[in-house]
Image (cartoon, rainbow, N blue to C red; front, side):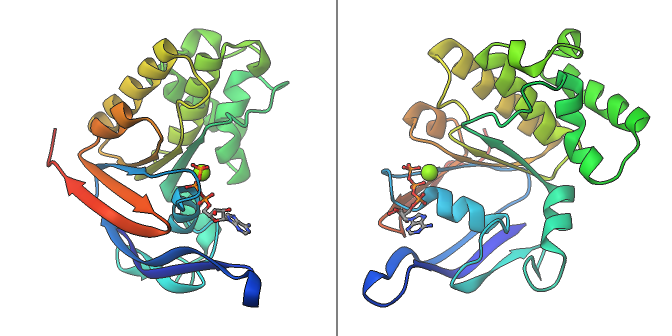
Length: 226
Ligand SMILES: Nc1ncnc2c1ncn2[C@@H]1O[C@H](COP(=O)(O)OP(=O)(O)OP(=O)(O)O)[C@@H](O)[C@H]1O
Ligand SMILES: [Mg+2]
């Protein structure tokens, strides 16, 4: 389980201080799908970054299975082992092959090429792109690039999959295909899914929807297992 407890985030100092998050306490149960919605500037990305230790809260703590991710462990290696991340911008290495892009998180962990390629090929199979392994990332369509980004996020079987506007740069058809894929993988692999989105239809497909307003939880609705 992943938890944020009494988290505040204040950007800037003194008269410039801005409360981006105020006293947020939330827990994300293993294997559930969660959407975080709210207007632009409501604090969604800030919360997501804090949740996976990419940013520090001003106060409060973030716990993974009861352990503080910033104090009790090496945050980067925890994230590397447990978290897959998909952003609106795909952040692929444009001139590298698809398989090298997917294997990159493993390379950063010092895993040898042969083993990386086996795992990357498995992940590409899950997103239906095994036939494009050798293509240059830049030669793929937007929807295919996002599938590569998802394969890269899943390559080391993370327990948590984080997505910030994963369909934001895609047309409806490709966006729907990516959504279906995210939920299919979440169900099949038992991954905890946390998605930030403006898209109300996407949010409604999650078991739980958390509404943020001005850095506070305005509403938290749980529909139960789908
Ligand atoms: N580094 C920063 N310094 C100062 N203020 C910041 C910083 N990062 C974010 N903010 C402010 O904190 C608030 C929350 O930002 P955040 O990026 O979390 O919003 P968001 O809900 O993700 O919005 P969007 O839907 O536009 O992505 C905003 O008012 C933003 O201007
Ligand atoms: Mg954002």
